[in-house]
Image (cartoon, rainbow, N blue to C red):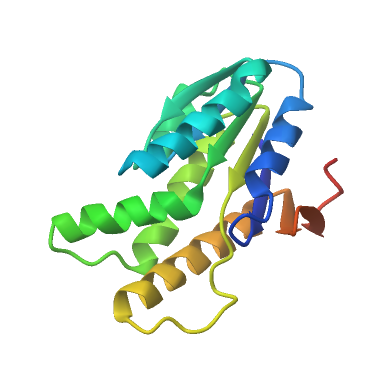
Length: 183
């Protein structure tokens, strides 16, 4: 069974950098599971910068926007796996559901999170999940944004409950919420 670390916080709070630092402090093979699709030039540039930042760390990268459980199993030989990020994954699931003219509800998100956690049970080593804490601001003004907030919040709750450690990032500073201090 994998050791699970969940890193959450607001946008640009230092989550990804901290997650990478944790991963690179663990000796052995590393796999980065990227959930972000390339949707425009600006996003392509962000992805390029992320890849460059991982170059020296001897990372293997799996790009998977939807089936994180399968991606985790593909990466199971690595000593540490970093999944960045769950909120983009939810966005991708919502977009796919929209293309299929169906709603994505909290029950399905819980089920998919449990599938991910089931994959984690079959893996040894450390798995680090990055997510955004998006429900701390104002209530969104439209139903789609409110559903996204709700789905992300439900996902974060399920993942945090099963995590061995939860870290909340604020202005680049890690605050341990659950478990022992990581680094």
